[in-house]
Image (cartoon, rainbow over all chains, first blue to last red; front, side, top):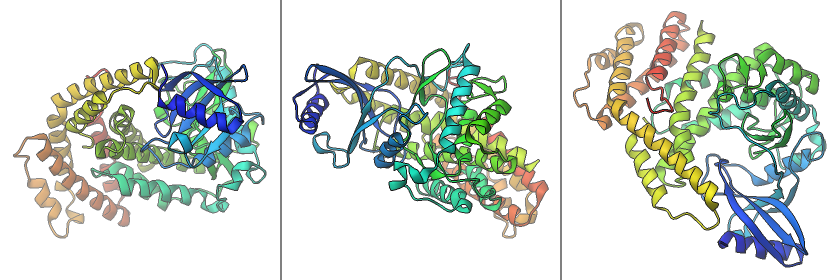
Amino acid sequence: MSGPLSEALATYLGRAWGEPVAIEDLARISGGASRETYRFDAVVAGERRPLIVRRDPPGSLIETDRRSEFLALKSFHGQGVAAPEPLILELEGAELERPFFVMARIDGGATASPFAPDPYAPHAARLGEDFFGTLGRIAKADPSSLPIAEVCEAPALDQCWKRELDYWSNVIETDEQHPQPIVRAAIRWLYSHPPPPAQKLSVVHGDYRSGNFLHDGEGRIIAVLDWEMAHLGDPLEDLGWALDPLWRHTEDGRVAGMVTRDEAFRIWEQASGLKVDPAGFVWWELFASVKGQAIWISSAKEFKDGGYREPILCFSGWYTARRQDEILAEHLARLAA
Amino acid sequence: MTPNVRDVLQGVTVALATPPSADHGMAYTMSRVGMVTMLATLAAAESDRAARDAIAENAAIRALFAGAGAFDADGALAAAAKEVDADLSVPALDAANARLRRQLIGLHEKVEAADNAAMNRQIVALYGKMASIRRMALGGG
C-alpha cells in the first residue's frame, strides 16, 4: 500500500538524485515524539538504499532545530561514535510539507523500552562499557572543529549551566498548567548553588540515555539515535541525564540498566580524559530531573491543548511527570538532610 | 492535576477517531493502540482514586500551613489551613489543590529567604509525601 508520504518522498528524492526513485516498505517507527520517524527503502537504478526520514511533526514535545540534529550526526558519523550517516537536509519541507532530513538506516539492532525490567542482560556490563565509553568520546571531541559548531552557540565555560537552566525553567514557566511546587523548589536550588565552570566545552547529545540507541544484543552499540537536542555545553550534562533514575530499569544499583554508578564514572573518565567532580555532578543530576519535568510538562500542555494528540505525549505528561516528581523529591530530600 | 482523566479520555478518543495513515504501517498502528490501552488502564485506576488523592494532598498541605505561623504575616496560610474540601468533585478538589500549591510555593520561597533549615526539611518531606500520594502504577493499581 502506498500513501501520500511514499509518493512525496519518491518525487523529492527523484529530483534530488536526478533519477527515478521507488519507495518501498515505508512504515512509521514508534517513539521520538519530537519528530515523525519513518523507515523505508529507496530503490534507485536497481540499488536498494535502507533509509530513515525524520520529519517535523505538527507540534512536538520540545522545540528542536533539525539543522543541529543533522550536523550533530555529521560531526560524529565515522568518528568513533556509532552515529548514522546523515544524507539530505530539507529545511523548507518541499513535497513533505514540513522540514525533514534523511539518514542511513542501520538494521538488525534492538532498542530497550524504559519499562523493560532488565533489557540488556546478560551483556549489560559490556554494553555499559560501550555506552559510557561512547559518551566519553563525545565529551572529548573538540566542538570547534566539528560541523555542529556552524549552528550551535558556544557558551562561556561558566555560563553553560545558566543557559540550560534558563531555557528549561522558562519552558516550565510557559507550559505549566497546574502549579508544580516540587520542580520549582529544584529550580531555585539550582540557581542558588551554581556548579563549577565546565572543564571544557563539549558537544552535548541532549537525550543520551537507555532506549536511545540500537544495540546488537551482544553488548555493542550499533547506532546512537535522537540527536535532536544536541548543543554545546558542559559534558556533565549528558552524564547527569544518562544516570537519571527514570532510565534505571533495575533496582539493584546499576545505572541505565548496565553498570554501577562508579563503573559508569570510571568508563566515562577514561574515555573523555575528564573528571566527574562530585559537587558539579550533584547539580547536573538535579538539573536532569528538572529538564525531564520541563519536557513532560510541555508534553501535557501539547496534548491537552490539542496541538498534537499523540498518545505518547499524554503518557509522558501524566505517568512520567509523576514519576519525575518522585525523583525530584528524593533529590531535594538528600540536599536538605 | 494536569492532565486529568477527562483530558486523557478526550485526547484518546480523538486519537482513536483519527484514521491511521497508509504511511504508518501495522507495527506503528498496533504500538499506538497499545499506548492507548495503557492510558485507558491508568485512567480507570485514576478515576477510582483521583478524589481520594486530592483530598489527601490538600490535607497534608493544610497541616503544614497550620504550623507555619512564623511565615504567615497576613494570616492567609492559617485561613487556608482551616478550609475543608466541601465540594468533593474532582474539578473542585483540583482547583483547591492549585490554590494550596501556589501558597506552598510562596511559603517555601519565604522559608528559603529566611534560611530556616528545619522548616525547609518539613516542606521537602511534604514534597516526598505529595509525590508518593500521586504515584501511578503501570498495571493500573
